[in-house]
Length: 334
Image 1: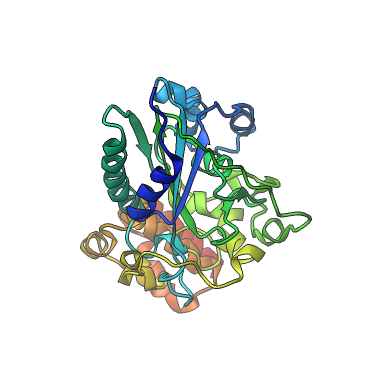
Image 2: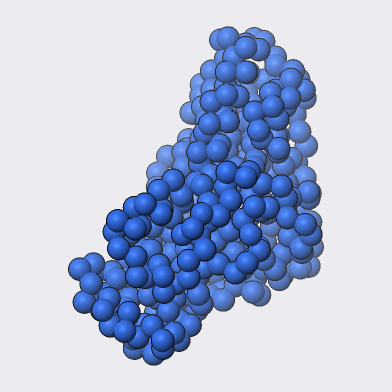
């Protein structure tokens, strides 16, 4: 079977717009950490994580004869503005899934030029793969105590994708050593105590989970610690020593869009047409119209925005039960 030159694979990925490229031998990952995380209830309502465990940990189940996992990263720090925002940095502009998929399509074409019989499987954090674990094995960085991949050069302001190949490469990358040491700034800074242990996030306590993935009512004790965050949370990244230098270069197309600059009151007051127009092509669509307004109401209550009482009183009778409950909770806080 043909062996691909790692240097040429890396050059192809760089040419397609991936600043970070790593390659790991497609030997299965140990499934025990994932299974333990699920069994302890840390997955909360992430039902997809309970399915396809074999596919998530063994590339050979996804691509028979898998030999290489090619891991790809795109920094998103620069271009996302340092001004305060109620939106997590990665979600203020164009959806990063588009950037990865477009570049991977081009990359697949370049790799098949090297070997027309090559078989691949590609995914961007929503398929049957564990990007961060593979990124660490492929030498892109190490898994920090906040559970995120940390690059020596770019910090953790990264989005990841991967491609499974049924061809070996002539040289694989070496995993990077974990370098958090005794530092626990991310663990101590989390307002809800979402870290069950270093590197282990309990989604039931995580602000990002509740504002992005959860479609129910946010628990009172979690909502009270939301601050002015409406979508996602960057606290554990903002305090990380590896993120204190200059921001990494980002994709200009992911620069903040107007909705990424709105405050919680402006988001809570959106109508459906405005949301559809402003959220199009951004990660904010994941929360949905009612989910984003729900989050904004909780944020207004958590921050004690008495000036927004009339807005919240109007939303207390909203057609969406989610929004109405959140608005009533916020009014109770005021």
